[in-house]
Length: 428
Image (tube, rainbow, N blue to C red; front, side):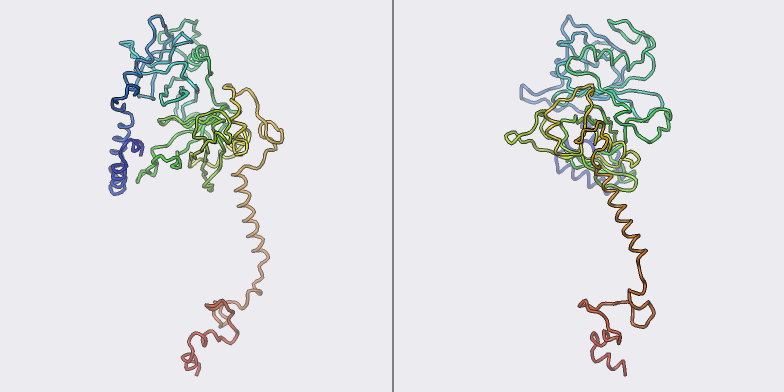
């Protein structure tokens, strides 16, 4: 249940027990814990404690700073609010902010210097196209998530120092603003060359999905209490396979794993219709390769209930970037990938894009299962009923071995061995 990690262990256990005994209370406890998880931690005595007021002041601009802005943008992280998106024109000390349209004060934001990754992904399961921008910091947990419609801009809602083309969409305008101001990174998008789902989107049949639906597992230590009625966990989300890494959205916090942070990927719980994807990732945020002197520990994150229809595309993506091979981890961590993903990667045999790559783990599991099934069929074909002894109803019983593992003789001596003199009386 989301938010339990903010409560004492004893209280968390009591809530879990109560929900199991009274399933109808699940939604109530879920709303309470979710609300708790969004609250600002209480003020601490430590001067360096990041209070909400400090965070607000940190993104306040200088008096000379000016902004490009777009009105009525829906923010989801860190808070669910409609605010004015402001993108500073000062590439040096500027910031991306969510500001109150009436007062002009920033509710929250992140400085350009603190932005580590900027990702734009389509919002799944929406009849009308929408796009979410995920702004991830180099360190800490001050993430930003906001969404824009896929429609053409309304000129009165957008203010920029650059000429506006009314044929542009909100997504195009925001990407142009961010790419112009951000110096350390550029906006990354998923594309069909990296991964495209084979599952048709019922609401947008002409558009290929670049995501898969998944459930965040519990191997990373997060509590994933299953709803007793719907059987769903609060950690439902979507995996996007990007040119630079893998992101799980849109639950708080957003989980992004660049290639250099992944030690290996494996498949687990491979079933007829679903499978799980386990990422073994480095605990350290260091981007340098681990050595004997700087050994880095790893932990496992599991994403479950992924549709089997997408395993081929995911396996191709994983092999293309050598993510299934733990021996390639040091090489990945030793190089920083270009944010635009412009450089093609090669497999061990030198083939680009994973052609001729080694068999994936999921395909291996399926092949072994098929081989076993073929062996069973071959044994059935070679089966000789006569070699198994007398058929049922021959008068000697169906069991062929006694308790000591010996064979039953043709005279039925097993009865005499087990019953002794009583068997003799019975035979008379």
